[in-house]
Structure formats: C-alpha cells, structure tokens
Length: 264
Length: 274
Image (cartoon, rainbow over all chains, first blue to last red; front, side):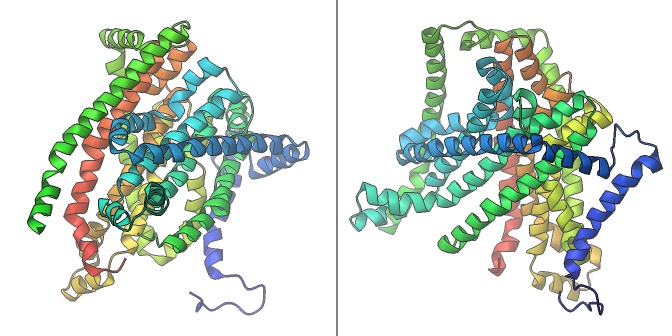
C-alpha cells in the first residue's frame, strides 16, 4: 500500500485517499457540466455552486441549523424513548418462555409494519407535526429493538442457565451474568438496526407529516421546484448519517467487540 | 445416561414447537381482543379508531371491489422488479470491487457516501426528474437493495480462502472458472444474507415510495385511506403489509438463506480462518 512511489515535492497525500476522492471529483464535475452538455434545465439540476450558495445563505440566516437541530433532537428523543422501553421490556418478556412464545409472533408482526406505514394513522391521531413524527420514530425503534432483544435472550444456550444455577446463582445473578451478556450481541444489533430504521422513518415521516426538519425541508422544496434545496437536503442527510455512524456506532462497536469478543 | 439426555433433547422440540405455536396464536388473539375491548372503552368515532369488525368489513369490501388484489399485484410487481434489479447490480459491483483492489480504492468511498443518502431522500429528486410513477419507485427500490447486497458480496468475496483459489488454479482453471466455481459459491451465503437485509429495507421503501409517488399499491391504499378518512382501509393496508412481509420472509427468504448456508456454507466452515 505504502510502496507506491510518491512524487518528489508537493504535499504528500496518501495515494489511496487520492483514488477515493477521484470519483467525487468526477461526479461533481459531471453535475456541474451536465446542464450545459445535455441541455438540462436549471430547475431540474441546479449547479453545485447554486447549492453551495443556498447552503451558505441558509446557514447565515440560521434556518438550516434549526432544521437539522429539529431532526436530530427528534431522533434522539425517539431513540432514547424507544430503546429505554424496549430493551428492559424485551428482557422481561424473554425471561419467561411462555410469555416470550406468546409475544414473539405479535412482535414480529408489529416489527414488520413498524415505521412508515404508521405515518397516515399517526396523522389521524396526532395531527400533522411533532407528535406524529415522534410517534412514528419511537414506534419504529421500539419494535426493531424489542424484537432483537427477545431473540437474543432466546438464543442463549440452556446449558448456561443450568451452569449458573449449579454454581448457586440466584435469579438476579442469572439476569446480570447470563441473560444480559448473552443477549448483548443481539441488543447491540437491535441498537444499530433500530437506528437505521429510525433514521429512515424520521426522514420519511418528516416528509409526509412534518412541519419542520430536514426531511420536511427536502420534500417541501419539491412543491416550489427549489431543486437546490432538495439536493442540499439529500447531501446533508448523507453527511448526518455518516457522522452519526462514525461518532456513535463505530466507537461503541469497537469497544464492545473488543470487550466481549463478539467478532463473528 | 447420555442416551437418556440425548433422547430428552431430541424428544423435547417436537411438542414444544406445538405449544409455542399455540401460544403465538393465543398472543395474536389476545391483541385482537384487547383492540376490540379498547374500542368499546375509548368509544371514539370509527374514522379515528376503527374496530377489528370495521377493518374486517373494509377488507371484505376491498376484496369484493377487486381493489385489494389489484393493489397487491401492483406492489408485488414493483417490488419484484426493483429487488431483482438491485440484486443484480449489487452482485456485479460487489464482485468488481471485491476482486480488484484498484476498483475498491476508487469506488469504496463514494459508495459509502451514497449508501448514507437513504432512498427516502432520493424520492423528492426522482419526482422532479422522472415524475410520479413506476420508474421512480423502481429506482428507489433497486437503490435500497443494491447496497446491502454489495457490501455482503464484498465480504463474501474477501473471505474466500486463497487456498481454494490456488488449488483450482493449479488444476488449470481459467479466471472465469475460478469465479464461477470458487468465488461465487463461497460468497453465496453472504450474498443471500445481503439480499434478505436489502429485501427488508426495500419493503418499507416500497410502501413509502407508493405513498408519495404512486396512484395504486399498498402504500397508496394506506395513504389515500387516511386522506379520505377511511381509516379502516388504512388498517387493512397496514395488516396486509405485515402479513405479506412475514409470508415473504418466512416462506421464501429465510428458507432460501438456510438452504444456501447449509449447501454452500460448508466451504467456509472448513478452513477455520474467518
């Protein structure tokens, strides 16, 4: 990797980084040149510069920051609310086999309709705005997470319970030293997939039922043919997700993989 | 003693599966009963909180008018073509990137970036570019399926044991033969896993795309039912969505995944290296 000969003089840039950047440059220049070359009207594809200007003007008047803040806060509230209820409840349900078996089909059913399909019903119940969007996100995250947790506990080998019981563990010890660590992989999977589903649900719910936020901004702009705002919204949705992933999930994953040896 | 415990282990699952199914059915019935009782207690107008009876009536009505079968057929067609397109492209790009370090360096970062722009975010732009209808939905669904398939194909290709490739090449295999008889089979379990994950996201993507960009289909049924205050229809759409997804997942995707892992997974399990 490092054996590639780097040119003398000039800043040393990792050649790998350079190759990776190249497609971005190609896409950007195609984007910039396409309207002129293929005769695409500006309302269909505004130039990168227009989008950049929009970005600056929306940053300057603070509207962009407030939309992003609205979305992120909603996501955080929905995520915490959903998971804080789902994981303990999931563990509690899964502890008793009869309860778990009774609940599993219901949970998997709700998990498969959770999300965007609830938006219209949420609008009827809560009206357009904050309440609906939050309901949809929390709902999505809750079912994705609880289902994972229940499956996680069920996948713990029976032997481990017996072993712990043989060593004189009481109910509480079994929970803390068998159930929770045993289900942890699935709980983490749940935390992660519920975020992925939650993020999609957030953007989608804001588009249909929102009154602010990044999803609302993006779809609302379609009505006015403000394609530069649509493009800006898309890019920001991508960047925000990458940021969430890098800042929150990668470190957690690295930590837990190392701590619990969860590498598959 | 080992015989007894083995027999106990072997004997146990049979009756347990049955009780668990009974319990599962019980769970569903309890939810339905709670729903009906809560309707009586809350006593709100039917458009706000429809009862199971209303929903069943709406279901029969939608079937009789032929709306529901037609919508499901529309959704199924869009879904199938979208998933097939995404799967094909995902496998092709996964192989390309997995097999060549150059392409992986070149395309890796930009693919990561586009993966982060969820399909939901593309729909507004696609509506401006292409308008409402089949093509927008097709692109959105292919887009969702593409990435998980690509990433899993990549993992599959990268974890192929070099020994196997060397062995086949020693026997005089061409590049194409290496691809078809070693790399593809050993990446297949990963590809199928990616397919199942992608299919799950795509199903939700389909519902959303139909809400915004279609005049038929399950997503449209759910959305249109709400705007016309036919909430019973909304709930019919939601239940159909859940039932269809569970049927697809349990009757098709999971058996396929299990079969591939059983059939081809051995190849990976032998070497011990990850």
